[in-house]
Amino acid sequence: MKKFIISLLIVAAFVAIPVSVFAQTDFSANDNGTARARIVTPISLTNVDDLDFGSILTTVAGTVIVDPDAAGSLNALSTLTPGTSTASAEFTVEGSANATYTITLPGALTLTPELGTGVNTTVITVDPFSSNVTSGGKLSDAGTETIYIGGTLNVPATPMADNYTGTFNVTVAYN
Amino acid sequence: MKPVHSFSILLLFCLMLVEVSAQVSSTATSIGIDAKVLAPITIENTGSTPINFGTLSRSSVEGEITVTADGTRTASGGVSVLTSSDFSAAPFSVTGDNSAAFSITLPANGTVELTRSGGSEKMAVDDFLHNSTLTLSTSGAATFNVGATLTVGADQVPGEYSGSFSITVAYQ
Image (tube, chains in turn brown, red):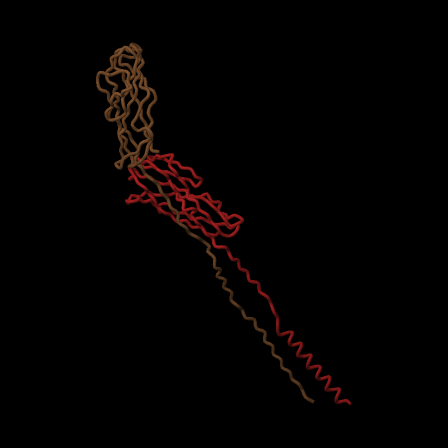
């Protein structure tokens, strides 16, 4: 009789597998932005010369037109001729080099008689005003430009002899 | 005959013994592993559009100009704005995980300056603000704008000024 001895050895092993999940992700991100601004010199206007229609002797109505240029000459379309020379108003515009700007001229202006409206009822107006900068101006490399203002003086028939004066505003603005 | 019967019984017993040992010596367990993979969060200055304060006229008094994230521009103090000049807040777009929450880090005050082109004069840019809801959409996207406040110094030298700033987004 044979004896069978069966030895059976079973080894069960648990191997712990370390798991490191370094996921290929970005939890933050960065970017650059930019910022910018343009600084300009404020635009300014300085009056250099006044608008002068000269001395007029007339009994009939008419106009005196002064050209908006350096000479401020009497325009040929004028129906009255002053006995003294006329002059255009001159302004200097200052601001940033090569900047463009618009100019706003005043509307009709009624001049004030020196004797006062109680004594002198003659109504003399400047209408319209004119300028050599019609569609907008552009400052030079030095940031300046000269503007000339002329206009049409409207004189009624039999005006009272007097000094007639007035003030007007011109506006310039960057655009 | 009798001896033959005894042998048969003994063999059967041995076999049964082995089987029982095998069942006690081994077990198996399963362990679950959980890991979530996120889409990377990204940020981009859309179209490289800057915070543009526009054209400003300075005076002998310091002033400030603010462009808000919501697209308005206001000036105070000695600076005035050429209102016809363009301005903009800087747009940014973010992508990442659907519906994820994120934070935005903008520059601290005193860290960003604009420098004059062709010169060294500077102007400070502070009070950076954004208008984000800080949550990505259900498709993992978000857009927002960044605005800031520029300080124009008294008699600031005229010219073109520019500078850059850093912005960081991060998952929460």
